[in-house]
Length: 345
Image (tube, rainbow, N blue to C red; front, top):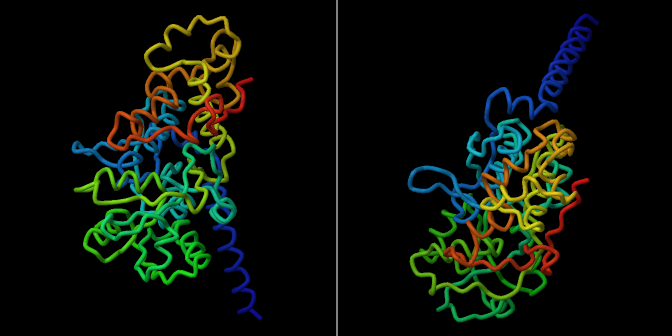
């Protein structure tokens, strides 16, 4: 009897400790960011255009700039940030453990991730789709033609690409062997060495890898997308306030572009009589930041230091970069794209 009592007390003690640990980790992310003086963001480090390190060791890219925008909103400084390079499979653990405050690493919003990761997905910052890349001398021009070949298809482990390409292979009745690797560098090494006949990933990733390969003309991204891939930032589900800040920073970047406010001309708008601009920039009696527990002029800091959404896109991915991406779905809704921000009011 005593043994059962002792076991019961031990179970209760472990449960109490786990509850206490969970409670200690719940919420207060903004407070922890302020206490340490920097935001910790999980990013890619091997995907040029989205997340990589330059020769000086500094992180740069589209997803990296989304992290910096959140840091600017909370701390007033886009450089008050620490980056954690993560492999795709490491994302949920890093988020759940508190190793990172947020994730901005070409991550697709799906039902299973939304529920199983204990995560809150922010607004989509990049609408994408999965594609397939092959060497030009392989001699195929469509995914359907590739379905007639017995090939080795390579993908990144721990991503939506595995299930998507399996679904596509089954639909085509294709005889494809699927090999997975931890990151894009490993895949490209195998692909370039001939261990992979084809490489599947988000089309943006394929564009990045083709553009930075030794011979871009040697590779062909086959036309058509086999999936929908809405990519965006992610935060732990236990802090609604922090998730709101991420959400409104992204929408603020889009709203600034709608108004034509950018990093170069924002000073011209600081005495604007337009009610919508006043609410976005926190001018006069407008209390945009007060709703979120941050500076009312948080978007002034963000736009001044990072620019609007269009500037971030063009700087990292646009026509003047080696990637040369057009806006497409990622254009504003007023231009026929899918980018549509909730109103600042």
